[in-house]
Length: 45
Image 1 (cartoon, one colour):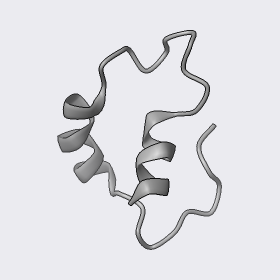
Image 2 (image 1 turned 180 degrees about the vertical axis):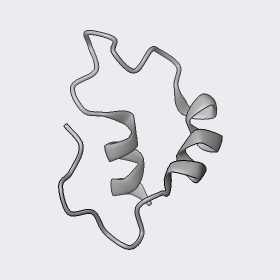
Image 3 (image 1 turned 60 degrees about the vertical axis):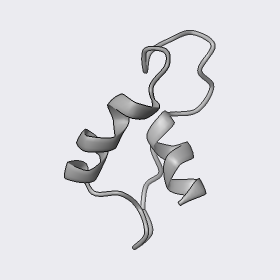
């Protein structure tokens, strides 16, 4: 579930392409994942 509007602090597609491999310990479509990793990363950022 990716957010609709977004915030100025959200990562760009280029930034996400760089950082995602370092954060993903399980596949993005893993059944135990409740929230999209990118949404969680944006929230923390």
